[in-house]
Length: 287
Image 1 (cartoon, rainbow, N blue to C red):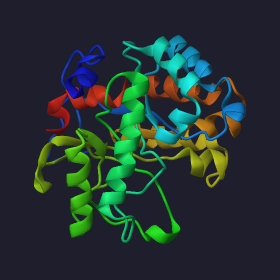
Image 2 (spheres, one colour; image 1 turned 180 degrees about the horizontal axis):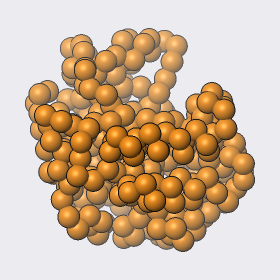
Image 3 (cartoon, helix red, strand yellow; image 1 turned 90 degrees about the horizontal axis):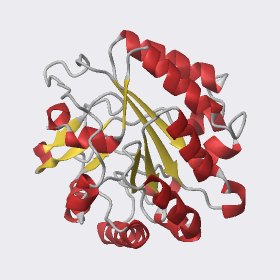
């Protein structure tokens, strides 16, 4: 099933991209990694989002990865079933996983490893029933409260190492870059130092819960465009973490206009737009 998930999508990148380990921020091609963590808990409020996303991303040829929460897939199984029928085999759309209940990995306390595993197993089972393949990628969920502070990386504690071992045992091949001393918003990594050289860590950052929902940085669109320009000047990768419910219920409109603006700006700045599965296939980028 893992091979099917990796092979079911056509290759997006025709040329390889080198990432020099000794100078990780200087790359031959800077990448724009656009993603949605799909967590919408209300089918009524989220009605129309997936259809609009397909329309906008296809019209503007914007690759995107959808990291889907298992509980959301069950709640909106008809909507996501229709979505999959539309995008199956389309190189622009990569569908991965976001746990079942938005459970946290890499926290100082966090849930026991066996609880985490059961949550991911449940989510992967829903994913496979709906889409016919198991996911090979997950995005780490942000939590608070009883889980305690987020650690510096999977290498920080014995428990966090066990958490990485656990997701590896489920067939995960890509997850956020999360190692001590590594800027996870800039670096691709592999987890060979923890015994998992076949797992890619991908850059993650710039969550729209901060700039679009909470308006922490003034005008949200101008903030992201400014960050794009800053990163382009340094030839750095640009991850953009969006959420379905923020993009649909808290954006200026329901045409996903801001999504098109970001993609247009990224192209003009010389970014290559890719999905996460594209990056996993390009081993020169991370292995």
